Length: 135
Ligand code: TYD
Image (tube, rainbow, N blue to C red; front, side, top):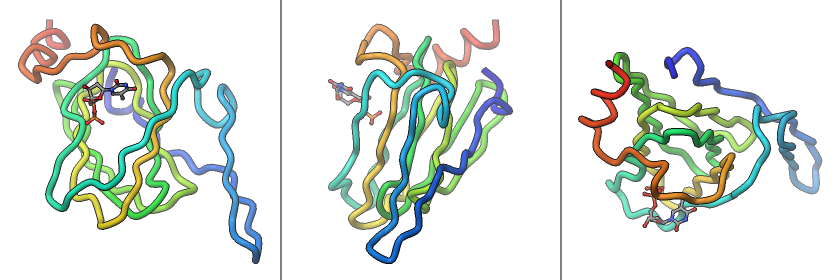
């Protein structure tokens, strides 16, 4: 999918002096039914996560705590999105290569996914991904 289909979306935020609350409903705040949730945490400084694209999976990436960069590549163009607010999320459609880096200390990357885990859905080789989208 073209990078134009990547969207930074603002989420509902219930501001409260007791602490703020944000919620996400499938097909309402994200454009897919949520099938799986996972999170990255205790990421050592300087490490990179991701480094793959998906044949069918759609994802929504949130900096639930702290901050990090998401590098996106559709096989033609690249862009970098900095996430540092827990009431924003990045919608990543299928067939977009992503890398996550520059994690701040103590950060938590929360990911909502449209399907259960399936290794066969991954492109783990950038060269293979690029050649598929370019043909
Ligand atoms: P991977 O998706 O490569 O991590 P990231 O893109 O966040 O850097 O997954 C790392 C490992 O964890 C890999 O062996 C597969 C496994 N895994 C699961 O078993 N279930 C899951 O839902 C996810 C996301 C990963």
